[in-house]
Image (cartoon, rainbow, N blue to C red; front, side, top):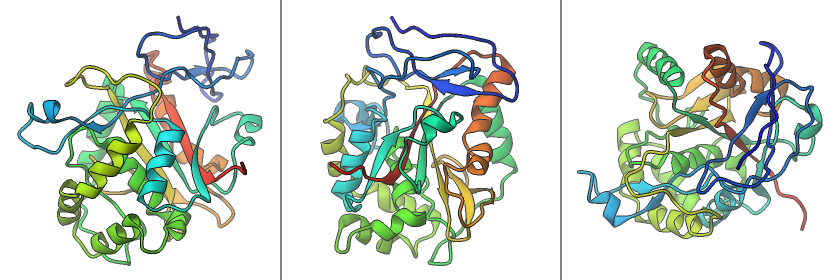
Amino acid sequence: MLAFSRTSPSSHELHICFKTAGFIRRTNRRVLIASTTPRCLLRRPSFRLVNSIPSPRLCEQHADPRCLIFTENNPRVMTKLAHRLGLSPALSFHDAYSLTDPDLVAFLPRPASALLFTYPVTTTAEAHYGKTNEAEADYDGSGPGEPVMFYHQTIHHACGLIGLLHCTTNGTAADFIQEGSDLEKLVKDTTPLKPAERAQFLHDSEMLEIAHAAAAQSGDSTAPPLGEDPGHAFIAFVKGKDGHLWELEGRRKGPVDRGMLEKDEDVLSDKALGLGPLPFLKREEAAGSGDVRFSCTVLAPSFDD
């Protein structure tokens, strides 16, 4: 079974690590919230968080014919999909084994263009989401003046796909979209559209469905039963054209501005991590839920073969 080294974390010190002593059948990737004191065996997990591959049988259960079942939050799968859509091979997704240990963060290539972060949909997380989303104004942005491209999610169980689009079409990653690619065409076609029209464009895109299905089948683990809810959500954190850190989640009203970053600060900088993903962990810690099902991949320069 999956083994963890557990300690009681302090309120100001969080370390994320993986310790695998086997595997649980079709389990999620688990991340330990612990202090920086214990030594952890860091390995790539045997199984990964699932999200999104088309299935006609599942789609029959919903009024909307466009719906997906789950597959992995796997750097290899996400990279394959991004490259198939038209992102340059110069960028790839990488596993982040820690967001607080400087030595482990240092293993990741820089600059980091985006974070694709997954978190458990707990009572605490949903209460925070409901409160903050309700307080936000409706978003009606469009056009080249948007600091970030935002995509509402209307495809059932497609939060991983929407997260990938948020990562690859914003910030410095957008400069690596290849000319003449499907991704370049998607950006050109959706940039002038209002949020509802943009969401409908993605909903109706056969190109996205085919590309996603091809990439998803290259994963490592078996998808859960049809109709099963994964209990997770995907968020992209990107640095926008305006230098701000933006939180992008397809079920929200719009993009969420998390604050200004300095010119030399990317999404893996201490400030960006403190404004972006780390508060999600701290809320679960404060609530005492014990839920540690977080994961993060980083879009950054590819390693040389």
